[in-house]
Structure formats: structure tokens, C-alpha cells
Length: 67
Image (cartoon, rainbow, N blue to C red; front, side, top):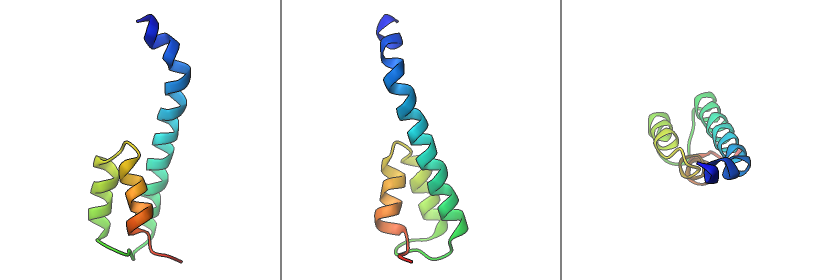
């Protein structure tokens, strides 16, 4: 339990960053209608299921349409 309390100052910012990235990714997916690959439903599933940075990063690397 003491180890957990020691790690909280490092873990909390990572959790906040992860949730902010996920929220921005979902917002971007819902407000844009064209994607390089896949559909809106596919990218929503990838972003939500792969929540630990991987899903949102994959979307911005592979799915986001260049403007």
C-alpha cells in the first residue's frame, strides 16, 4: 500500500493524459466524416478498446485524414 501512495504523483498525470487523449480522439472521430482507412465505427472501437494510448495513437497515425 505504501508503494502505491509513492507512485500516485507519477500515475495520476499519466491517467489524466490518457483520458484527455482519448477524449480528443473520440471528439475528432465524431466530428470528421472521412478517414484514410476504415470507418467511423471501426475507429471508435479501436480508440475505446485500445484505450491505453495505442488506440488513439493508431487513429492519428493511420486513420486521420490529412487536411
